[in-house]
Length: 293
Image (cartoon, rainbow, N blue to C red):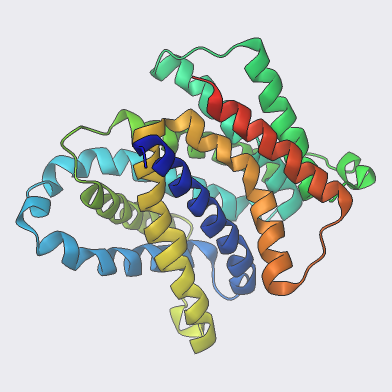
């Protein structure tokens, strides 16, 4: 299997893992502050990865040289999460899901300045079609629900967060060096995330409240930690290095479809005709964007 094809399979797997994290996160919502639970995710994930890094001399030697770059990458990663959590205090998941469809286009626009890549008029149209297809899945084809969408304080915060998610992908590519060890880069990104999340905890005066998490909820947290944090961080950075941020972020259009499919398989939630059509449209838009240079 070629390196490029393997990277596409990797990012497709990551898309479904992230889709699962939205479902699991909903089960954990309201128990403790999201900033606190994300800090706990980062801590557990980094502790799991720490022995692999520290017991390997080759990896240990890369820690110092990777730290500064990982701090920048993790800054955007952490600010995205903080912004998302703060936004959800004032807005709905529907609104944030709709705004998140801007990420591929924003990533492409940043790529013009950072990587000197060009975007044709046809590509702009494909991004628009991808947004339409994704919104059809999010709103289940309900035009009245879509038209009732209006921007509020939370939406403005989340728009800023989408910029950070795009910059996270850009920085993962920009700050990568050929001699980097990806495991070390992921580990240091998590460590950087712990630092930034700890600062946010102090800044927003958020209590930890980790004792409120039950044993069943710790299983959910285990999924978020291992699969939605540790594994996806590794997969996204690995795929971004090979494919570039524009192509990786194109998979964002598949996120709502992945969630709908997972809900159908595991919770028997129905998928109506308009949702299926939206999944098809967003999938076609993604495939076209992936074929573009």
